[in-house]
Image 1 (cartoon, rainbow, N blue to C red):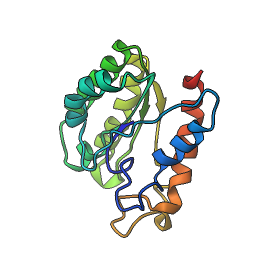
Image 2 (image 1 turned 30 degrees about the vertical axis):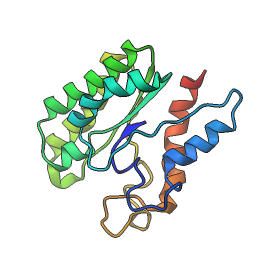
Image 3 (image 1 turned 120 degrees about the vertical axis):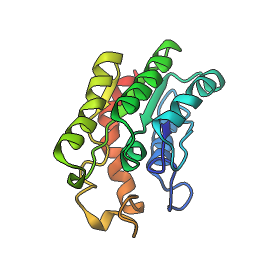
Image 4 (image 1 turned 60 degrees about the vertical axis):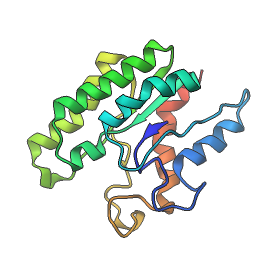
Length: 177
């Protein structure tokens, strides 16, 4: 799992985030799966791209889930760089033999329709080009519910974590074989 604060349990009790819930679900499967959460709060796609080769060599994953891009948008970074970084991570993961799942993000409408559409579309474009599975919007069913956010209105709270896992699971399950 290569992500940002949404996957690194920012502001949550340790062990209560969606990645930990996924880890418990996968540990109960036969054969069991081990989840490595390499998420870092504040991570951008550039940061993920700079770390992926070492992570792939160290952990030799069968599946790589990439939940990055939100911080790029919040910082107004160039979308072509975000797209290139996501593609590089997907390509590196596939090159190591891993299957890839991209968790797409969207930005609020105050960024303007052209930017928001381009940002959402880049996940689809990377997934198609790099033969990755895609969840179009990771925060579906959460983003429009204020009660599912911490006071900062950026990070989902503990009540939202099961919903996030439920969003990911239908796209991840076929990759498990």
